[in-house]
Structures are given as structure tokens and as C-alpha cells.
Length: 201
Image (cartoon, rainbow, N blue to C red; front, side, top):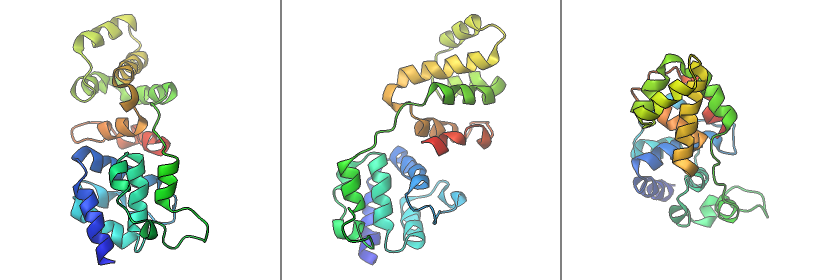
């Protein structure tokens, strides 16, 4: 399946750095849960390395897996370039191909919920202001206002900071995007504090 691997590499090369990170993120939610690429192999992975991993772990189905992730990002322009016969290989007769399913019923990620933000707020501790300024781009004047309005209640301070970020980002404030932000280098936060965001995306 050299042709499939070449096509896959072309697709991955067309993704921006941010889109590639989201692509890797959505590999966790592929329908076939019997196969998983180890997370450590996906850290800072290049398009070439990712194409090789998909071909190794999903032989003959790498394009179908790619179709799933592309539909989530979403990059429908690249999705339409996938061949339907390859994307639907090894499926029962009468079952729609992955490309058909994604095009027919695209799933738009919803905003991170109030409950998720509260759960995260409880885990941020004294790091909430640093994360707010350096990674969520919340203005310091707004942080001072939040502190004043929620005096001595650090959890609520963190929550309203996250709520402010959610309102500012609108449709981009998804659990997936928040996970990707907190998973960046330099965010001094234990992975277990925000791992639930990946599971709920």
C-alpha cells in the first residue's frame, strides 16, 4: 500500500502545526479501540513519522483512520480527496465508508462545559494566574477583578478565569483545544489534572 502511504503523507503535509496536533489528539477517539498508537510515540511527531506510525499500526486502514481524524478537525477539503474504495476497505457489504459517514453527519465539537471547567479549576491551585496570563491570554486587569470579586476563594477565581476564556474564545473553547493548550511545553501542571479533557472530547 505504498500509494496509500504517499497519499497519507500528502494529506499530513497539508496540515498546519495546530491542525496536526488536533489530528493526533483525535486519533484517541477512533471507532476501533482494539488498536492504539502508544502516546509516547505521538509526542512531537512529524508528518513523515506519523504516516509511518499509521501504516504500521493500521495496515490497510490508515486512510480510513485519517478520514476519521480529518472529519473531526475539520478539514473537509482533504477528506474529499480520499478514495472511497480505500476508505471503505474491509467493511461489511452495505456499510457506508468512513468518508461517507463523516460527510453525511459531521460532528462539530461543543464548548467545554461549566462542570468541566469547575473540575479543572479545582486542580489548578496557585498556578491558575500563571496559566491564565501565559497560555490563555487573559488580561491581568481582568484577573485582578476576578480576585477582588472572589476574595480568598481560589477555586472560584480559577473557575471564573476559565469561564472568561471560554466566553472570549466562543466556538473554539472546546475540551480538545483546552487540553492542547494545557499540554504545551512550559505548562507546569500535572497531566492527571487535565487528562479528563481528552476523554470527554
